[in-house]
Image (cartoon, rainbow, N blue to C red):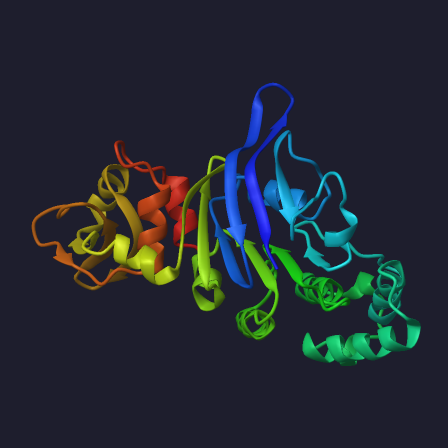
Length: 303
């Protein structure tokens, strides 16, 4: 199986360009699509799911153009959008049965599949409760279940761990790893730790452009020697944040332990540190010739 994104551009009106000259070729495995909020991730996911069309360029699934003939990819697609909604008066079982029928699943097979998926996402006990009474995390788990109804060859999940508690997030990560055999899984997120746990390859996106695409190990090697740990007084933190790309801070009795991504030592007393994927993310995403964007740094350190 092969998904090819070829020079895709997406414009909204004349002035807003959500994607620009984006190209990527995917085969079986888990791709972590990682970038700040507003980078163009959801726009790309909607194009791949045939919800919207690119302004320029094309996407092909096993050689078939998605715009000219979307049916081949729709028949093997599982999609969890960022703004997933439910019918509040339906139970989880009723909702999944409705979607299974819409996907063309045979009724008996659908019932068996739904029971297995509800067990998988830990919702068996709440399966006959109306969805309107579900918490945000529970609704997200229903969304994960509906994306898996047809045992998809292409699974797209957009910010899937939003609203999940730490245990649910870990469970979902493990699920993605188990699903990644003979299918393409695209995990779109701004949370580095989610990608780090499951991705076989990572694509970094910023301002609608592909910044880097490689294995996690290669991205780490590319950033080697650019991570520093520095202990500073609290009153110096604002200045350091303004002048350097900070990937993390930790307050201790001896001061603020700051983690900085930089070509050279940020100051006296700074010591080299082992590179993390968050460091690699910040190195590629944040501007290099000016002080980094605080909003981008906050995104990089999100847990």
